[in-house]
Image (tube, rainbow, N blue to C red; front, side, top):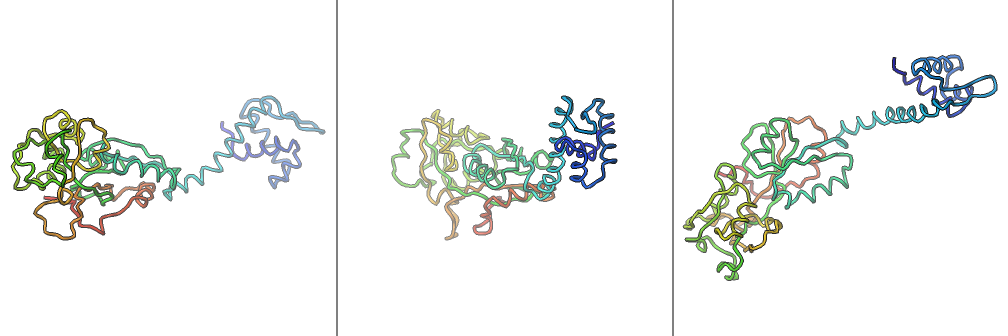
Amino acid sequence: MTPTLDQIRAFVAVAEELHFGRAADRLRMTQPPLSRHIQKLERVVGVTLLERDNRRVVLTDAGRSFLDDARRMLTLVDTAGDRARRIASGAAGTVRLGFTAVSAISMLGALLRRLSEQLPEIDVILHERVTAGQVDGLLRGELDLGLARPPFDIATLDSRVVFREPLCAVLPIGHPLAALGRPLVPDDFDGLPVISYNPVQSRYFHELTVHFLTNAHPRIEQQVHQILTAVLLVAAGRGVALAPASARSLGVDGVTFCELARGGGDPLESDENATGEPVELHVIWDRDSTNPALWRVLDLLPDLSASLPDRSSMP
């Protein structure tokens, strides 16, 4: 048998008052049912917890040990309801967050600091995955939220822009283009070996590279999956590459970053309001998620979707 909460509360009251009359008053009950609670508790536990006679009540050694556990049990019961309500409201709980290496550089650190300050009872479990892996994780229920690159053509997922930045050229140290002292234009890459991105696994950066180099005639040396790989190949002298400005923080030796004309945006674009920050980072989530903490975290993330053109469905 297991002790009941009424029995445990009765024991704690008597143990703290060391007097059945005062304990009964504290619990707003009479002494006979209080005595029965204590007797039943001792039968369940199998030891004597209180020595009592007509003059005094004394805790046994077993009673003193049991009192510590009894207090912890009552505290847990008293706080469990409040925690359940906080989890239901999203003020507490767990969010499983997917991210890419470069998204971590651009905003993951700031997001985690903000969460620890404003939602300290939400635990964030991090999963480093490429965008395709994040989408798969959301669909399988393994993730609640992702920091990923567009496009997202999954009907059950929602997304919004949370960060924008320019595209830059990544050049080996001492490369002639680095000495031009101006933003680079597509023609500057004519005939140069370029490290590009896989059109399937890294579709987003592949298309950004293709758009900027429209009408130029570079030599595509390799197509890689990761920005870090592209930067490392540049450092090894295998060519030049285009990468988001935040890739500077990868700290790879042997490379330099140069600005691109229009921030690396499509050189054929006629929109006068173009931002010069064509690289977008999106937050993605399952619109049918039942995790209340997810919505609280989303409230802390910026929303740049309304103020600037949406490029999440690039052809």
